[in-house]
Length: 366
Image 1 (cartoon, rainbow, N blue to C red):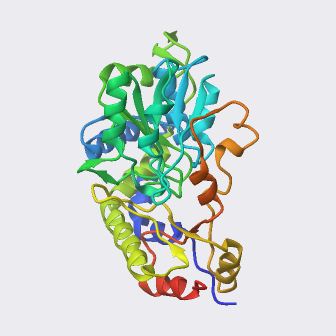
Image 2: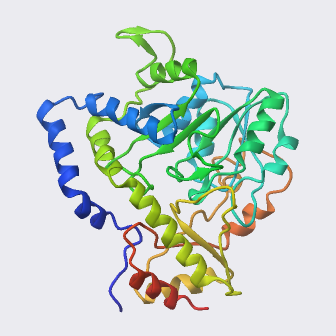
Image 3: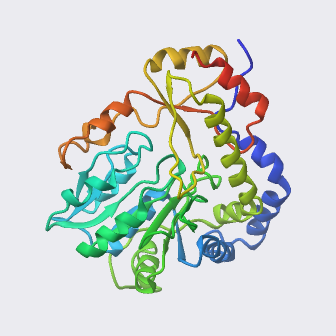
């Protein structure tokens, strides 16, 4: 068997950033402020500047970011939140955790993002928010969603766990709606060495509420003004993010180039349906996901050549035992069900060489 290819190569990234990462972590070890140390505030300021000025509230995970956003909006039992069924479970999980009902709307078959043309029909008197998922690194049609929520007095929470660094009409993902939430899970476009996440908003009142919620609802020490959670991001993870920010723009450019190279080299192959990037936005390719008819055969052929693959996601959320019974379906979800049987993610990361990428492409049974 040929030598194995890395699906995501964090080792090469660390080697390239080792002096900066080590120095940042050592600084935390030296001052010993492991929770809410100075690196947390420094990171929040830099991330805020990066996305275009929205306030940044760092939290312990991308899931916690979504949960705190819902809590800050006061969403709870009896409310509904419209979202996509084709995403990781955390999106629906947080809606259920606050006692609200996930309402699933079908996706576009080419981008796999929520089909915004179907959203308005799903709105009822119980709807409080829309939570689009910026799947695989590309935002949904955010302006259309913002227009819908303006008409109906709702909020948009962008689940941008996979799209930090992407753009939409020249604005950055996480700053294209009232609230943007991202994840710093190690495999994300901007990842730390554990768990972490962030919330972005240009609403100062919401920002204050979310900062209180992340520290057990405290307005000041031991003065609890609301119900909260233990949602702080630890200082060492913030230090890692600060080190990675030094070459994050380079990594984004590499992701764009590698993704485009996949698109160019695989164009015109009838057995492969390629992902589509809309002309008014960019995709940072958290995953490069194709669609194929005989997925098992393609997985086996690539495995034989030492090439790993992944399936994001094999079962839509409305068909999951935990979420089917507690959700509402608007219309049919035929696209979500169809693509879940066809999607296949190929190795994708900023350190993927052209030689290795050509090897992956050559191994595909076309």
